[in-house]
Each structure stands twice: as structure tokens, then as C-alpha cells.
Length: 363
Image 1 (cartoon, rainbow, N blue to C red):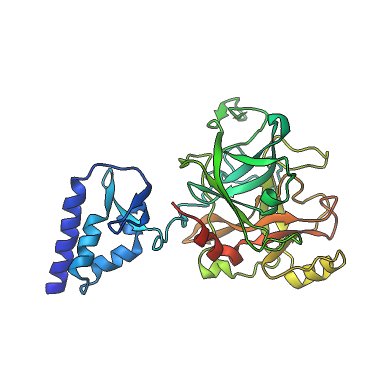
Image 2 (cartoon, rainbow, N blue to C red):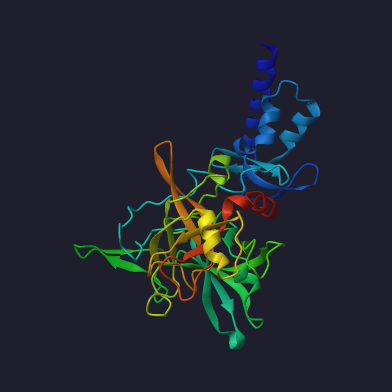
């Protein structure tokens, strides 16, 4: 009885304190110990929630929790969760991997709102010329996941200066389509944002091992129908899953069979190869694959290609009878020319790098 009363009183006290707090937006904050933290929902800061429900929590820890308030949004209590303890900087399903549209089976051009996490990396070249030559995937409000070679293996005169989100047709803004009855349906305008920081894996090599990188955007991105994060395979059931013979999706604006980049966001389906089989194949080209890589494709004319580098290899999983998309791989390299029969593309296996990703993102 005493324990329940203590917990209840603590929760009531917290609610009373937060009721009179001025509303703040999500973002960086300082904890009572002057450490950097993330302003998140109280219910999402597991460490502090565990302290609240633990009857042996000291009065000092209770004071710490009370002093950790960072605002309210509506009726949602916000708390400054220390970055070293924050576990939810990466969204988990169903707050990621959502796709509202029904996919077109067998089509090449995506629907207007299909794969809303797709990103284009903007490069600034000499004479201030700009271009998009790699892709990526939005994984939360501040970070895009891409390939290390999209950052490190570019001409010395190029700079990574931006990321475009919510794009569909690069030749127009705003993008619109017409249904069979002639009704016009338009997306929101695409969003161009700057780059605050790029983080390449420290062990990335010219052999394209550890071909993974993060781009930190220069501002917090608001989600909408056309801009959403994809899920990462954080849970062990997905992180270590064997996807042999599984069909997955690739998408991007890369070079097509016309040898020109597509203005439209295109998609294709590719099948995962058993790693040992792919290793034997690539030994011919003196490429030695590791278990941190995946192989997919190998059908003539169906492949990721130049310009698709850094984009996601996507797998659809069902959780509680609801579907969600996870990024299983990152486009790394493949045969030249693209789409050769019996030559799959090579992808960085994202599940092997979850710890690295979590250790390198911040609010």
C-alpha cells in the first residue's frame, strides 16, 4: 500500500508541475546536471520512467525528475532525457515505415506518395552548379542514411551541401498527377534543407567495406504525407534476419536503360542472394564480400544504378498485422553496366550497423 501511494503521489506531483509549464518544442535541452539532452515525451524516456515506478527511488532522483521538465505540447508532458540515456531518437514502428498508398504491382514509376523517406543528396560543384548524384533515406527528423562513398568518393571540387525530401518529379515543383476521372492530385512542395554535419564510417575503405554514412540536416524536419521516416532494423529479430530469396524494393532517380537519370522516382523489385553464392560470384571481380553486406538482383535490366547509390534496399514486414517498411540495405556498388544477368548488386547490410548509427546520432 505504501509503495503504490508513493508512486501515485510522485506521478501526481509531476503532472501538477508540468501543468504549469510553458510549452516548448522538441529539440535539444539541458538536464539538471547540465548535460545535453533531448526534449521528448516523458513516457519515451525509459530510464526516468523506470525511476518513477521503482519504489526504492531516492528523493534526490525524484527531485532530478521533477527538475527535468522541458515543456508541454498540448497534454503531452515533455522531459529532458539525457542523450546518453535516450533510446528513442530513432522512431519505431508504427511511427516509421508507413506507406499510405497501395503499391502498383509490376510498375516502374512510383505513386506520388510512395516511399516518402526517399532523399536526394545535393552536391555543389564548380561555378556553383548543383546536382543530385546520390540518394538516401530519412530515418528521423534530423538524419538521412546514405553510403559512405557518396560522401568520401566524390570529386575534390564537389561539396555535399544539401538534401532534398518529398521529391517525386525533379522537373517540377509542385508535383501533380491526374486520376482516371481527370481529378488533379498534388503533393506538397519538396523540401530542400542544408547539411550541418556528415559522418562516414571510420573504417570505410576503397574496397567499399563499411559503406555507410549519416547526414545531419541543418534543421528539424516536420513530417507530412510525402515526408516520412523509414524504420531501421533495431530489434534483433530484424537485425540478424536471414533474408535469402526474399523480394525487396529499391527506388531512386538513377540512370535508366536510356543511360540518363530519371526525373521521376522509379522503383523495382530485387531478390536477395545467399551471401556465399554472391561471394563466389564477386571473387571473379576480385571483390571479397563480408557478412556486413547483402546481394540482390541479377535479373537483366532490373537493378539499382548510378545515381541510386546511397538509397535504401527496402523490406516490408508485418507487425501486429500491419505492414511497415524497414531499410535492410544501402546501395553500394554493382556490375557495370548495370542490370547484367546473374550479377546482383551489392548493398551495405544496415542491421550490422545499428549500434554505430545509434552511437552517432544526437537530438
